[in-house]
View 1 (cartoon, each protein chain N blue to C red):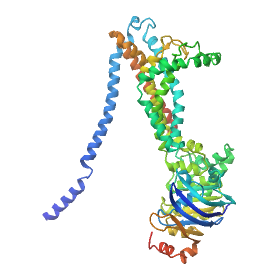
View 2 (cartoon, one colour; view 1 turned 120 degrees about the vertical axis):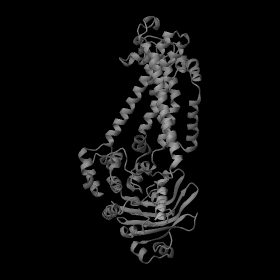
View 3 (spheres, rainbow over the protein chains, first blue to last red; view 1 turned 135 degrees about the vertical axis):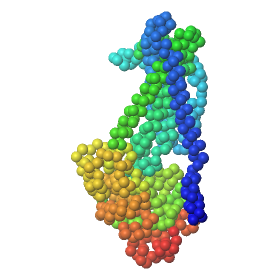
View 4 (cartoon, one colour; view 1 turned 90 degrees about the vertical axis):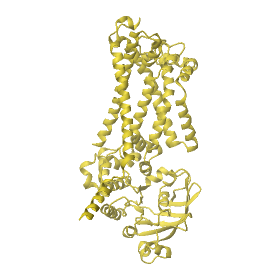
Length: 322
Length: 259
């Protein structure tokens, strides 16, 4: 009687003793912890900005200095400055990055592709101060003729012409800052898109080729649709870096405070990040609160842009999946 | 529409490695030709050289002549893209374009060739191709749904519809049933019988019964030894091949004594 019962018990114990055991649980736990840490860090930053910055929204006029009388009047030009520089950077960097990534992943022979990829990655390792120095003391001068040309030729055109008003004689304009930013965000966008491009399933590529697609048609039919989500991520990371970039913008741009759409102007509003860096030294407690509040605005705007982009991509994918 | 293929002295390389050596054969128009042989003997490699898909792999190249309709596919100046529009291909694993609907999948090849076409003409081609692939009745209600939502066998027939929509002269099939269940396999085999009126069909298969069922001619590929290049051992009508092959190694393979 007892022997079979004991045997059965042992058997069921064998089945219950899952082999997965400790290793799996440690891994699952650490993965979860890592994920929660990110969320906690993000929430921590947000809470800090909210608490420290809350009072910044309602400081009296004199804190904002001579150029603005309210928080809105203070932050709006900065926001415009931040976004114009970033948008210029994206307009230049995104097509260039996608092009480079595509050449590396699908066009160039390996002996060219590998070194080019390496050099692009090296661009990311250059500190932003160096880009700032280069932009302020070399590139800006070289771009003066371009500023004049843009003003002379595009300036007279209605509407678009507003972007190219009176040019900055030193070339230290939002446009120059945008170009420097473009070079800075190029590596990150290139690296990520290159990776997702090269992950396109060979099966899909061959399906296109076997139908008589040229290489470019194959890329359009298979690589881009497959990589779309990754391409958006890459652009968002690039945008994130451009929005938050401090040194290069601080050094390149000659700062003004008037809200203006002229991207080659003598004085343009700087970016939020650059403004914080500039003003941090003179911190009176009140101004510090205001600066933190501008940081909160940047934080929220970045979030908003990110969600918007995700939503747009997600919507087109959902439409396909229906 | 269907065209014959004359293959003479074809050597196929991956870089410096000679993978298939000295193939000579004539693939008849409007017939089904099957290639059988053990794994790694180069039958898929050879198949892919028939529409110049082999050279998609870096370093891969082909020597010799493959003549379709009087034109050597490997003559300098022949565009591989043009070759692939005449010689369609169906792959081992079903590979409909994941972001496209069933409708767009069928038209994918045509849109490359023709660019814009009238909606009514496009509808006709989609219906004709899907009927040709025995898939119309199953998908006609959901042409705008993604192709990835179909079962494996349906996806493979969608890929066949996509290949025949461009009206190629020759249709290559690289183990088209190896990822499918027996019922889907039988559906594809029936389809092959119907398609051979219009297309010259070349099929690679691991399944000797399948070769016996669907093909008119059979080629047996084998390796002389491990590390040696693959070569064509025997090429004969399927009936003769399975009843009374010329080469003893063919008989050994077919009767299951090796491979």
